Length: 132
Image (cartoon, rainbow, N blue to C red; front, side, top):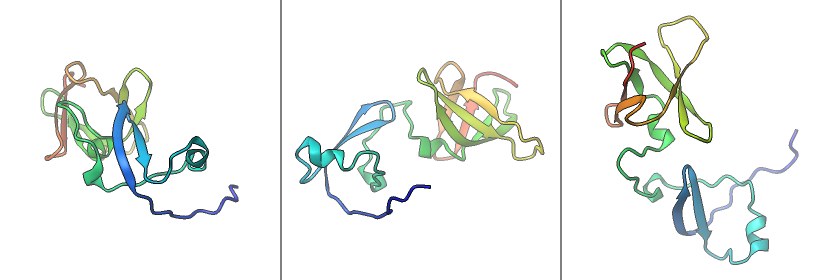
């Protein structure tokens, strides 16, 4: 069991940039050297949603994909996105079928234009290209 004390420390962020897929570079006010920064390694940083960088077309934050309903190309309901997996080459949607008693999950690679036809975050709806 981890004996580290858990605490919140309020900090001011000077700059937040999207360095690569699902990773951000954060510049914190008054953290100006490597030693100070290393004390924060493996810390969780929470920010207000409005601070998130604007994404390009066909880019989505995982938080927005979770709980989306997924349908096949014929409009048949497949399941709901419970979480995502990062595989290195692409992200994978993990679906749970709401009406099934089976514990099996459905995995769909998140590849816009290949396996994913459309994503509508406002209506929480994803349509895949294939029929299951």
